[in-house]
Length: 237
Image 1 (cartoon, helix red, strand yellow):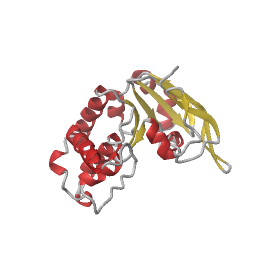
Image 2 (cartoon, one colour; image 1 turned 135 degrees about the vertical axis):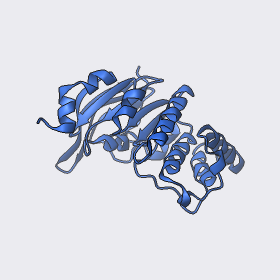
Image 3 (cartoon, helix red, strand yellow; image 1 turned 180 degrees about the horizontal axis):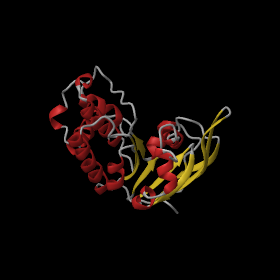
Image 4 (cartoon, rainbow, N blue to C red; image 1 turned 120 degrees about the vertical axis):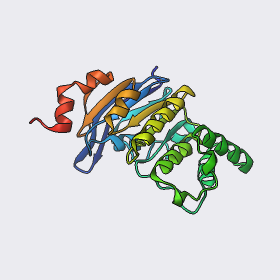
């Protein structure tokens, strides 16, 4: 049994097939990359996994249990956390309060939620920002808080959607180190990212898609040197 598995996943929006017969497996402890040109269906895959969109056909299995057909909040309870490509913090709340809202996924006790939020913010090296209003954070800190919010749900599998977009080179380096630290803590990761040096340095295996279909999957070097991948990003010329 695979830790996580997508079987023949398909999503149609009317006549548009956004994800087309996609199959892949992720093993426990891996960092698995999902790449492809803009509009290739990567975020749609995340939305299907987490129940934001209903699946047209196929199946999503996590630790042997089928996830498709259950509500988003139950997917989270099963141990699948995610970040979002466009970060939307609760702007009038502090960083601590933002992370506490996620911790309530596991508890109804305010003290327990606060302790979990503080633990996660310490892990993400945001101790000095806990009382900052979320609306005043830099893009780098907002992205880091988004990861902290996902971690506060206590996931076993974490989906990271373009957490490096818009960051400076130093912030990207710090983001890579945080992701490695998350993996070391025992959390399996699937990451969508356009910054290739990040993907190539982080991932054990990578799946490249275009028009919702698999182009190739394999090691970072196999994917990077695949002619079909190069053409999908750069064109045939």
